[in-house]
Picture 1 (cartoon, rainbow, N blue to C red):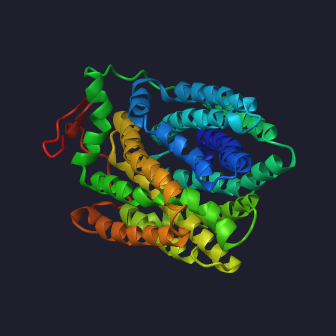
Picture 2 (cartoon, rainbow, N blue to C red):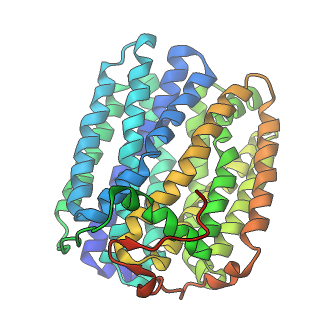
Picture 3 (cartoon, rainbow, N blue to C red):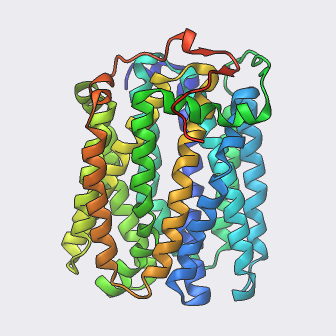
Length: 418
């Protein structure tokens, strides 16, 4: 971390991204709670996350954009657009305007996919390759550190004053992120022309994942895991109301506790990856996530707190190791599309599972859904560690050889399904 903080651009960028998460973390939970208060429905509150994930399903298009223009100005403009978008939430005054919240969250998802891929692709240009794990960990520390108090801030402001302060806060932090991007000394070369069809550009990242064994493992695991993880978006309200018998704003307390666990996980992630490799770190995180889901089945506050800590730690390990794996195993000109391919492969199952979870929770106990999550995490753990790919993911793994990927051209993978 000390070596990383000697790089001026890295410090400016990481500071901007960390401050930006203040508004993000305050907004997303506040919007779900807001819908819950306006409608009284767990299902309609869960749909806030569904529309966000649905917007992220456009990741293949945003990934092409990330790889075809300079990433720094693109990210700066996207932050400013996001600031304007969230201000539309000021139009919401009652239950009849709930669709406006859904529409804004859909756009928020599109911009989230673009900014996520841009960050994954931009970071290797800002820090040395041997510090990528530390940089990704520091981003998680900052993001999760903000989650300790920002969800409470968002939920508290919503309950005390209303949604307007939360909306202005998020818009302001997007502006801060844009300013930090503009302050970077990084000067990016103009990307080479694609030289391929639009369709080939859209599918390039997915094909590359499929022909790279380690990334294929990651892709399949993401699809399997997120077919059930989306249940958690609605389950969280049930854990608070049915398990702990608390009011909806108490969810902010559990999110803050989960963030504390994520900080601990982020601090440990880089040394764990150096010892175990990225893939084993992801697998361990999945197993811990399943354990956390089982603990949330209880009605004891202390155990629910412990389960929230486990969830936070596991998500940090999974996120940091997955991003680092992508950055280390992908040629620079394709990172945006590869990251977008993983986002796209994840958003479909996650969107469906959020919608299914919102429906199922009206007819089955939330504890049954938690048990399903735990069972799938065990399946994913076993799959991820089978085969030769598991041993090929040490921290020293290098990006694919240049003869595998020419700039702008991706060879057809014969094993890619139609």
